Length: 116
Image 1 (cartoon, rainbow, N blue to C red):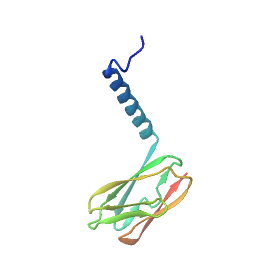
Image 2 (image 1 turned 90 degrees about the vertical axis):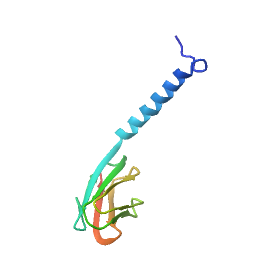
Image 3 (image 1 turned 45 degrees about the horizontal axis):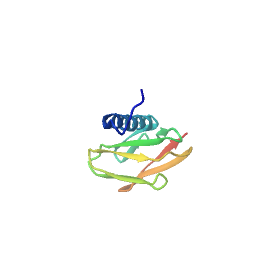
Image 4 (image 1 turned 120 degrees about the vertical axis):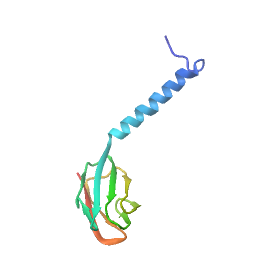
């Protein structure tokens, strides 16, 4: 039996919802997660690794008593993280390479994302 979308809107809605949810599941499966902590104005790890050609979600946790700004020219991102807070920076799929990031409020605080 063929579904008639025009005469049965609930079937149409179910197909749309399944398509959207199915697509969302696929995209999240292709996203890598990287966690970085800032303490004593130092990134830990200093050189996190991520896979190439996948979106990357970088979770930054600031354990310092001062705000920090996670910034990277090569990644094209910047985000202020409050003291004791955390934030997520979403990065486009990247080619293999090394991508520098830093705390714009404390220029000596630097790290490198290694994409392989």
